[in-house]
Amino acid sequence: MAILRGFKGYYLQNKTEKMSNFIQSSLLSFLMVLLGIPLQGSPVKIGLGKVDISPPVGSPMAGYGARKGVVESVHDPLYAKAMLMESDDQRIALITFDLRRMASPRLIREIKAMGYDQVLLTSSHTHSGPNADLFDFPSKDQSYRLQMEDKVLAMVREARKTLFSAYIGVSGGTVYLGHNRRLVKENGEVIMRWRNEERKPTHPVDPTLTTIRIEDFDGNTRALMVHYACHPVVLGPDNLAVSADFPGAMRRAVNEKLGDEVEVFFLQGAAGDINPFEDKQPLDQDGFAVMEKVGQKLATAVLELNQGLNGKTEPFKRLQVREKELEFEHRWFKNKTVGIHLTTILMNEQLAFAGFPGEVFVALQMNLSDRSPINHTLMLGYTISGMHEWPDYIPTRQAAVEGGYGAGYRTHIEVGAGEIMVDQAIISLYKMLGKLDFDKNGF
Image (cartoon, rainbow, N blue to C red; front, side, top):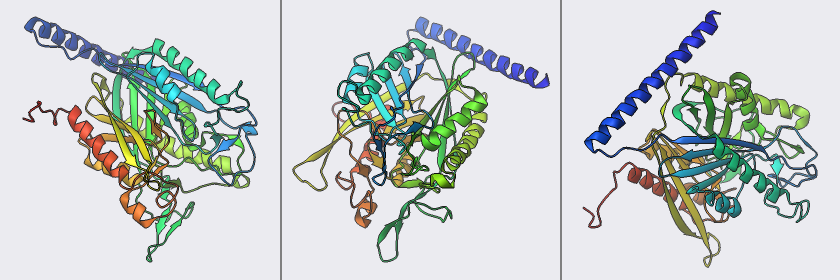
């Protein structure tokens, strides 16, 4: 009973504080109208959606060239989830997928037709999902890909019906789940250390974990967004069961504590060269149990950060976004180019997302975070927000010189493209902060 009274007391105090903030905000708005001062606009509203996108048995799988076989079962379902953000002058649709990748001009086009200015399709990069690039499986008339897109569009329409004025809080910490899989030897040779169960030190590695809480006016936690950079490849090519890998295990563990009514999103970071310590854990060596253990470790860290956000959320009152079209040379074919659509989002001037397509090397994420004027600046890897094709790996200049997987091959974008993209994201943030605003004469 004491626990219940304590919870009730916290809830009433939290709600009272929000009501007080609301009244103060309303009075301030009334005075601003009387004085002729322009209003800042209404609170940002959030809409949430979720749909099962698990493929049928028999689907070709993606992620491993060494895999033999097709989907035999579903170990845990794959989901697409929607986080809709709407202010007076911006409407953004962020859709997450439990897929290796999702580049869909159709989804971007049709969601924009619903009234959204920007659409970001971001994937967890699980290697235990279907090959979602295929449009003719199991047939052209019964395409899994097209049916999945139909589900996502219907989910977004339903999510728009759930819009609520939001409160937001951000907390950051660290957790070590993986290692840098590129080992540069003293002679300059690069070898790939896919697995590192001994947990030998590697670099660069970004252990930063960021948790974002979305609440409604009544203080109910409606969503948690979890950002971390690590390949979801605990399950290996011997696995023929569909799984979201450790991000799915993390979500389940968080929901066990907070309840299924809380929508948990996983936002993959720049995991291009980061693998879990237990890479490709064989199924006959407790592969699924190890995957659950990695997800539980992440969930424990998430829940700790979330606990620290109690009473520390604030009204989600400002949403800004800038887009940039970039064109780079093709690294191997000089008569070809690689187009990039870069979208940068600023929320309450305390949290930023930078959507980067392809598989970005982690040092670029660290560079963006270190140089950004925003405390919590999150690179969203595997994120498509334009009509361009998938750019594959995006290494650093140094890694490109060193060579190796993803840096010397399995990459086709111009060397240095990643650094330019980071620069452009930082410029966008300074512009949204009003620190790079000039009149037409440059004064």
